[in-house]
Amino acid sequence: MIPNECIIIGGGRSILDGLNYPSKTSLQTICANKFTILTNYAFKTFPGTFLAFNDRDFYTPLHAKKFPDKNPDIYEELGKLPLIIGIDHNGISEFKMDNTILLNNKYRSVLTGIFALKLVLELMEKGTIYLLGFDWTRRTGLPERDPNYNPNSDLQIHFYKDIKHGGVGYVGYYENHNPDREFNQLIKKDVKIYNVSPESNINSFEKISYEYMFNKLDNCLINQTELRQYIKEKLCIK
Image (cartoon, rainbow, N blue to C red; front, side):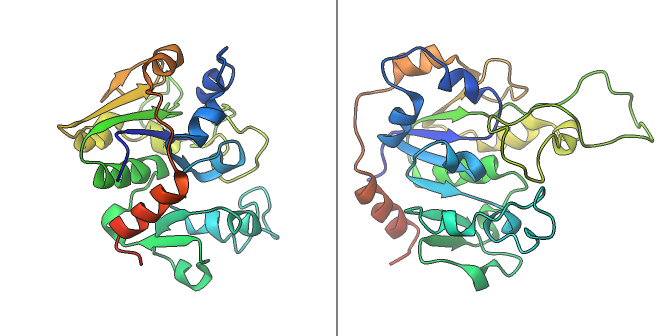
């Protein structure tokens, strides 16, 4: 069955607070033993139950050799992961590996973090979700309707700063969309969602510190192999 606690690892820079938190148990160790969903390049830092992705060029970067700064070629690395879940669009099924489940557009979202949260809410009937790295970083003081608006910035918005990819410094979506409008529709009666990023611009969920989360997590250890199999069955994958 699905555990009543889940951790979703986004890409926001605030995750560094969790990685540096002085605890007897590291954040990576916690994630290895919990129902943990990784998004995008978080798999390079954290173990997890499965990796969620939303973009074909993340999974199979056809232009990686021509534009390595935009689409690093990680296809072989992904093939070694136990389970990956993404969206079946833009011809990605042609490149699908055996460890990958492709879902229909019911779950699709512009942002991988929202896709992952939608998926967890589908799987989990009740319980607690901890959102890590959901910062929604954006610049302040920008003039309205600036004709010279540039969606790219020099901000370090990801915790994995050494990985070159198309989203480095890109804040265009965050600056042109209301995060609460996007996340308010994901509030579920019997699921408590915490945003483990006190300075986050997402206000739909209670914001807490890593200290609070470390103290609140239960001591249950998850059998990841059994959980992955149950998730496959729950998503009607034999």
